[in-house]
View 1 (cartoon, each protein chain N blue to C red):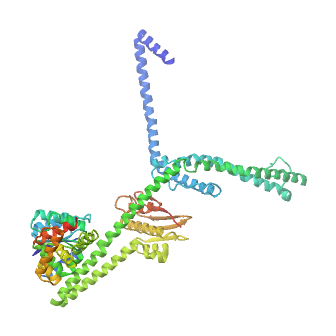
View 2 (cartoon, one colour):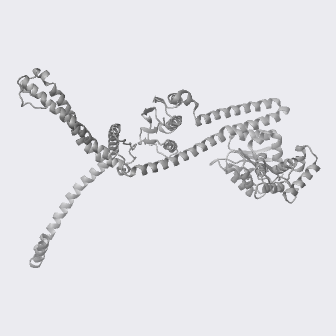
View 3 (cartoon, each protein chain N blue to C red):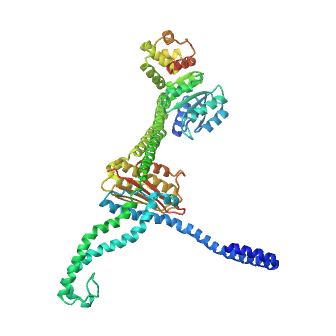
Length: 419
Length: 214
């Protein structure tokens, strides 16, 4: 309507007073330019804020999501203790976009306000009821210590306590609190748990299909890792011990031929043959250690990792707390993961110190390798990280790597203990 | 006899060179990779090349590819392929287009110096050297398929040595029989297997390998 009127007014003015109309148009244009300029200014501020948000908040956002996951996992563990088990989904997917599209993360974000506010209030209420009951029930025993105008707990200061009669009445209220606590307690607890039960369980339908997809992938990874492993062993046998032994036979052949002609020369060649045989033995030892380090059997993970640390060119602290022991294959995987990680640290990081921590939490084994090097580690730069990932995923484990340019590099591996 | 050695394992390469030089053979060059090998063949024009199958960069069949290329560049070049493993299927491929001036031996045969030198000279002279292991695999397979039932044990021995590339004289020496006896055995073998008799060792090898590898 207003627009129609305005249009009519424009037409009327333009026809009756052309100059006034033109002047009006120009003025409007000037005003518009001014508005556009100020709009540009605020939009610049908004753009700056957006960029700031992207630069500052996004990295922190993933951190926040991880914190939410950690809180949710605690709640899951709590709820699993007295109801249907709520399986944890493992680490938050890397990358904010992937994390935000993860159904687990979304449900956790929905759960968070419920539990943070409602859960908190219900918790306070649920604990206050029995507290009042206890305080009021025992009130006749200690009311003399209080001033009459102090009132009684859960009853209020407006009730002056004048003698045993009133104190006994307070005790009666305590009985009321007790009845209420007994009656409402379980209900409150169920209400408090409801958002968690509902939102922290695996998303309906996604549960099994996700698991199937994951198992299929890890099974393929397992076979792949197995083939890679066999190829590695074959290669190291072929290039190492086998070639050395061939050299031994060649040198022995040469020595036998030289024996008649030039015994001193023959002795020299025999010396070379012996050296080659010793090399072959050394390389066989390396291969054997690479298949399953005997030290694992004898000294457990702690001893084996101490050995690795002692042989590491970068000063290395090792902390191992694994009791009871894990399955042999898991220990071997842990050993290789640490060995490979330390090789990376020595080769690429330029670190002056590296810390290896291995701890068992329930049925999960957590391995962390942290160095103070230059960071920037990436999979697929010939760093052996892809190999580590294959090995870890073959055991249904998880690998997370944080290595910002400038360091530090922190590699975390979680493996099921299998025992 | 001028020889070029292509082997990526340094210890083995030098060991081989040492042994051949001690036998009075001329080792013109030792190289560790296919490119170096082809360059050495061009530069030194050797009579024989001793080539390892697995060489850098992929450590699969670089040696074979390089040997084929070297023979294309220098048609008369004899090539003795050394390998840590021998496979009958692989031998079939290698000798498919002719076995003249070609050898395929396990690396450790080098240690049996006299036999190795004999094989080397045979290959250098346009003959053939097939590793006994390959022949063993072939014979085992044919035995399970019972296609050699008609051969006597002695004829089987002769067949194996013949398939390795040995000439009649060498076979006679190995088995400590007369050359005439070897000749007779070979005639019988060819007759029993239904092959056309051939006195040239290398063509005999291809015929026998083809028969055994069917």
